[in-house]
Structure formats: structure tokens, C-alpha cells
Length: 436
Image (cartoon, rainbow, N blue to C red; front, side, top):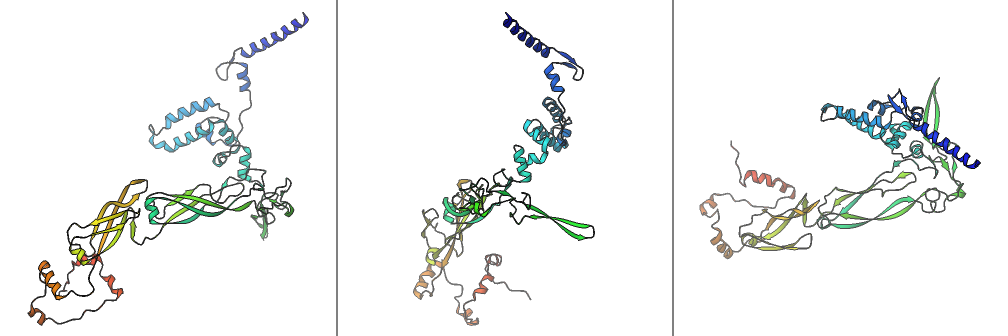
């Protein structure tokens, strides 16, 4: 009977405590009835922070509840929305940024403690933040969240590979984290010691006297630890990397060359550059350098080809073949017209593929160079040609007797560039006489 009475008293006290907690009480501060648990939350000390810019943007206090922040955001968003107020675009961006931070409990706590710099650094917790701002030594911290340098490398590519697409294997040498000591520089537990000269900061402050009452403070890397903030005794250094924490490694990259890529285009391999403890590796950037082709010339999506034909082929119908960049053999047939020296013809759809649209191709332009015979034709051949081509311009004996005879000789190579195609098109192949 005693035990049952004691147990009933315990249950009774628990019931009475529960009733008191749930008993509504008028709260003049909020203008509504609250329970004990809500009153305890109201009695908690206000949120203390020195970073209040985001709170000022949303026009709330640092101790505002998530409901208050959400309510105020909706109010300001409707007021400064670009659709209603086109001149308040920047203000609306600030409101959205502030709400994104303060509505997230983790981001809000990080902002209250360390400000906007912590959010830009992307630190997920306090240890990451201190590592970002103050660095670390060895494996006692995660190290600064800085990014390593990018490696640029030229990549010579043939015109055939740019036309057909290919995969090129590239052998590179780069620094990687030592696999034996995992980037610590030593395998011993107590092998790393803080540098006593710089107090594990890696930087020493040097004070110089410039004059009476004038001094100058300079920061420079510590020479004892080479700016690392720690030292490793010679007997404790890793036998593989000799305390350097990195080792040289050969890396074979398989570089995909897509159809239609152009000269100077870059291919990026993210995070494949040199590695270092506490540093995000940079990128390997390969720049395409198109090799010269003995037959084809390229201009963006078009190809240019020069073809030599004889004088007989130029005057009559002819056909010729050539091998394209993909190994196909193409047959060219003339349409029966006379091909003039330097005349250009085009074949649509036989140029370079367009990068990103490999089924779309440019054009192939062919320039015909007519090869004339070295020695003059005999008189019998001239008579036959005269039947089809007509008589020559100079046929009258009287004209020839009155003309002054001149001898032709070869022209030096430096004078041949005076006759360009543009000049010939303007002059029309005629010799103009200047007026006196």
C-alpha cells in the first residue's frame, strides 16, 4: 500500500507539472496567450552579433525569429520586385541575398559569427573557417582553401584529326601528393614541430628604423621553415619525398579532339594540375595548334585546294581525282567550259565539319592552275588550233613591219608580286596610256 501511494504521488506531480506547462497565460509583449515553453524561449538572451548588414537590409532585428524574417522578406519582395519597381533591381538582389542567408540556420549562424567573408570562403564549419583565414601546418588542419596555378600546354593537331575527330594521348609530368606519408612530409607521429621563429605562422615581421621616431614593419616568409609554419627534423623526413610532401608523377591524358575544332581552341581538364597539401589543384589547359597540311588550306569551316591541270585539260573536258581528309577518293569532272588560269570552283558540303554540329559542313574551293607547255607548238599544230580558236591578233605583215621589235626575258621573283589579282581585276588585263 505504501508503494502504490508513493507511485500515485509521482504520477500526480507529473500531471500537475504538465498542466502548468500547458496552461495558457496572457502575454502582453506579443498580444496573445502563450504557454510555459514559449515563455522560456522568450526569456532566452537575444542573439548577439556585430554583423548586422543583412538584418538591416531585411529591416529586422538580430533576434528575429524565422517566421519574422520570412514575413518581412515577403513584404519587401512585393515592394521592390522589378516588375512593380523597375529601378529597384539592385535592392531586390540584396533582399534576396540577405534572405537566402538568414533563412538558412547554418548560414545564419556562420554569418553571425564571422560575417560575409565566411560565406564567400565557403567554409562549412568553424575549423574550415579558421583554416581559410589563418592556414594550418601538416595534417593538423585542412589547410587554406586556395587554388593552385593552371598549367598551359600547346597541343599540335593535324588537319585530318580536326576533320575526322580523334583521341590523342598526352604524357605529362606533374607533382602529386606523396603516397607514402600522405602529404605530411614525415611518417612519424611526432615528426612535425612548430617553427619557433615564426610561431607556426610561416611569416616573420621585420621592424626597420627609418629615422627618429619612424619605423617600418615588413612581413616576409620565414627562412627557417620556408613559410610552412613547421619544421621536420632530417631524421624524421619521409624517405620517398624527402620531406617535400609531393612527388613527381607521370600522367597520361586522353584528349578528345572533336570534329570541327579550330586553331587556338582550348580543352580544359579540371583539377589535373600540380597537387599540394591544403591547395585545390588547378586545371590543365591544352590549346590546339593546327598543323600545316601539304594539300589543303583551312579558313574557318571552308577548305581550299589548288589543282594543276594541263592546257589541253583547260580547253577540253577533263576529269581528275584526289584523296580527301577522311580517305575518300573524289572524282572531279568539268562541265565542258574552258577553265581559265586561276579560276575557282566550289563543291558544297565537302568542307570542314562545324564544331557542335558535325553533320553541317562548309565548302571546298578548288583553284585551277593551268600548266602551259614549255616549248612552243610546231606549225602543224598551230594550223589545227587555228581552226578551232580563230586567227591570232597580229596577222598583218604591214603591222609587223612598222612595229619595233623587243625581246622578252624572265622577271625576278621580287617583281612578280606587283601583279596581284586585285590589280588585274581593276585594270581588266589592259595596258592603259596616261594622258599628256
